[in-house]
Image (cartoon, rainbow, N blue to C red; front, side):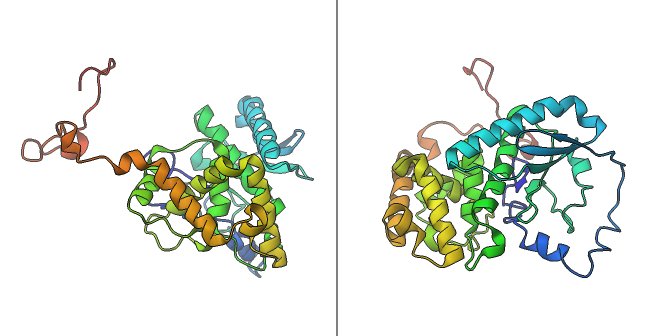
Length: 322
């Protein structure tokens, strides 16, 4: 699941991406209760959608006439994302993915696929049991492509590791970290949170990290993203696939450690190597001194203006002046 933040793409404290894997144990569970005939009856609908279906090689796309002019573009993004994820994981889906589109975020909030109320800021979600992707398309083209890639990666994860067969919990950082990694993009604030964790020496042991001990709900996602970059740097793209399928055996069949099977490492050895990878990656930041050693503080002073919170420094177009 993806959420939007005020800083750009996602929320500062994981406000919603603590949509912690919305991987809906809750979605399916609540949808199978005796209340099924009644859920969402009181959800306010402002619009009526005349749904249509457009079929492509790998998707069944549900849309309404107001979206039709965007359909070719979105279809192209979806198929490109499929080719990318499928090639990286060397895996194909045996079904066409239902992709439900909304024109705007406000219309997306009226969806009745997920029976519970969506937390504010949730940008899209994927279901683990019916394999549906649901998202609005009112994003810049690059962000929309990343959004589709993120949610589609979840569908591949659900297919490789079926949630109905789990005997052990699957770490949140695996699901969300891989989906973020597949987008090939770092939100600057997300990367900063990983850097700060590495510099402060608070990177957890990923092999048993469940993502609940940090106030920043985004950190498990970001550390997972970094962990998959580490895996690729050391074992290549094939390492990603080996790890996923080793995890499948471990959490479904109760086999040996996924780390030993995929990487021939004990879990604690994987943790040590990942921690070293982050420390080496962000070493230049560890050696930095105080900001005052590098320049003058240009922020507005509270004693000179009451508008400190709304005034900020910007560089000139040439970059020569502030």
